[in-house]
Length: 452
Image (cartoon, rainbow, N blue to C red):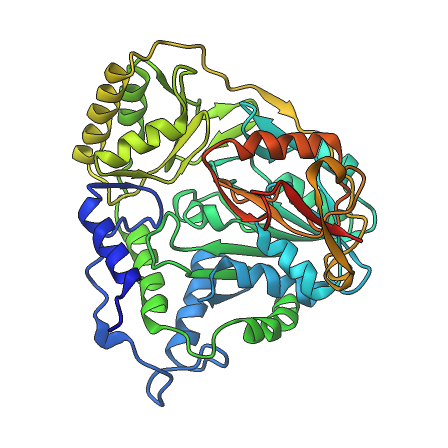
């Protein structure tokens, strides 16, 4: 007998979940994708790897809607679009400039291509999450050796600034710009002056727009770039793409184009700000603005975000992210006003039960300590001899494993990075918090994998 643990988990979650404040943006309310649409490549359908029928027609429309020279669907997530770009445009001993909030897909692309990484300057908001440095500082610090520059906008927490002037300046410096806009695929459909100016722009259509999970798109400013990169897309994408995934992208784009999308964020903001112990980060912090479909709620020091997260789950409310001092709520056009009142009333109950008090909101914005370029490329790290050592003895050694705390999913330690006291102290600080990890194989033993 096969016990179907995944099915059981999903059934339990469905029964427990009364309100989804997390991605995907469809919030479990899709009903227009019949299983009869789950077909393979037939003469009457099309082939994602060499489209000449319905997929080609759809991708032509996709490029037209977003104003790109050429566009292609991604059914292995935005991840494969990022990796294909890096594989096509870098090689051994070439350097790529990465944002500090880069998704791990950037590093994995470098691992396969053999290129190395330098890191762009960044800032930290409320001592908790990372955003890009201002344009002037970034342009002054970008390495002359980096032919390819990666940017992330908007970031995971929804904050970003208009990157168009920055991208144009980078292109004047003969840099090719790869923009990870996985969290911003809806913005060009909402803002008529939003132009895709990056050489390559990556979208994810499940996060806010509400397509099925692992759907994405890659947009090219010039067709000659598309010719280089699509070969690698064909290598990385499944040879059995799901037509349900592709159909869900079309439906999501149609919803955003044809409907007057309601957003009740302001209603929710004012209600949360009236509850003692909770406050929402401003929608504008210095040069940063926030995507209207995200809310970052700060927590009084009387309690932690993890505690509030657990209390919400007991009431059937599941949020996108909890850290020690913040919760991230993911809004969607498929939310209702009733959903938000349920959340507000539950937060009021948590505030009363824990006797939370008012506090001064921290929305500080400071420079983040610079990270030196990797001393070894990811590929060289993978081929080197490695060993585990105690954290206390790792200072000065070169890391050989990714250590990625979740939430955020942004590497704290990169393979190839030389370890110092600040990094190790941050690691120990996070270890006592209730977070998930990717990598760090021997965290319970307080050991780390390094180059011999």
